[in-house]
Image 1 (spheres, rainbow, N blue to C red):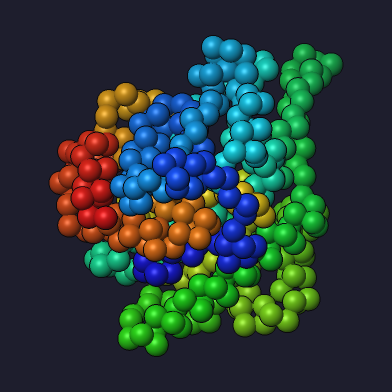
Image 2: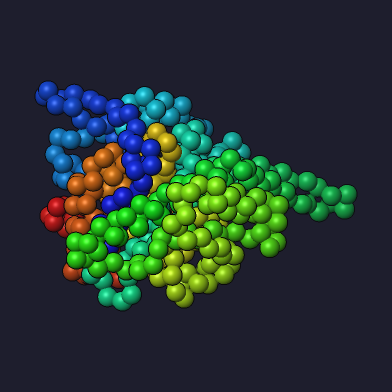
Length: 387
């Protein structure tokens, strides 16, 4: 349901648009958008998203190209230059991030730049809509997964010890705070209410919606095993629901993370908004991409009170990088989420509608991840043609 997705990036609804950085050209003010392609296919899909932004509203945006990534680290020893952070803070209204090729093994001195950006910009919520295209065959899917973005195991506090017998043991600290848990819970409940209002408005206009019940938030945890850390996350979420009367209209459910994965694949239509700690949210949102075809179509946004960084869910895909066949749709949809935050709902809606139409009507034009023979450029051009 396109009308429901239009406000799923939520920041303007929850906090009001952040202060916007403007540049001036030919007497007209432009919104400055930071572009951080980073690694792999990020260098292909972020330019595609830029082309769509330029097409949907000519002369509306100025673009600032910024550096980050593992490839940059290999060249310079720095994965996230201080200049990138400062320019985001001082010159940009919002930004788009491509993908990062963080290695699976330890590399001395290296730390993920996207994780660092989330912390430095206080982008405490990772918001990932997972929705089937409007008009697609089958039961419609319209989930919103909200992942706490600053804590859990992603604080990267690890150590390796050697035991007296010479064997090694690895330790990782996990951080869950009441403050961060309540903050992300509030966002989840607010977004559930907003989605409910949008559905009701659409019903009154004679439209159909997939979700028929009251707004619902599912709290995902594993407190039956991790009774202290996950227990605190669970208790904090439940407390927010109980303490704020405005959330009384939101149904609250709980789901253990393992059964959440099972139910998500068996009956995805029973979920509205799901909120989870960092690691669980990362896993279930990537898994949910399979419900709608590919990681290449799922958008994401890292959201704070004053800034939004759009980020497609997919990784850097080194196996196809440079071949021109990366799916640009997730990046294009992430750009639409960014526009929503900036108060440009009409432009965002046009992008969502064009993407849905391409997905539904031009199957052979799709990239190989969706079973087609298309290219990054071909899909981008098809979306632009329908704006």
